[in-house]
Image (cartoon, rainbow, N blue to C red; front, side, top):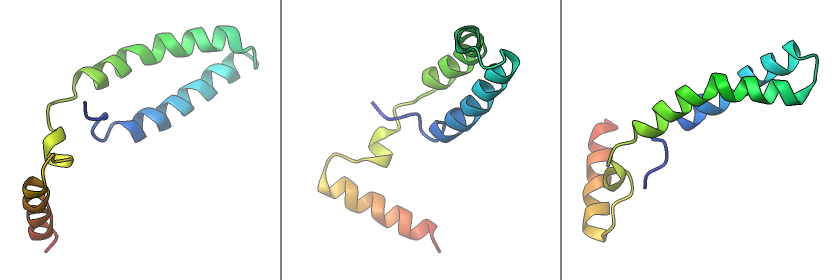
Length: 79
């Protein structure tokens, strides 16, 4: 399975921001902060996880021929 195809960074950054907000709102009491964080984040995380497509072979081909073809396409797009 392919990772989150570009969503990992946005999930991490927005997650850190939301967690900091929740900890601040809870005056540092992590128990309710974590619960509210989970409630806020869960819908977006599930959306991100469910939007992963079968593009893994484009990013990480399984044969040498497919790797070479991918590299040719990447070089062509870098011009």
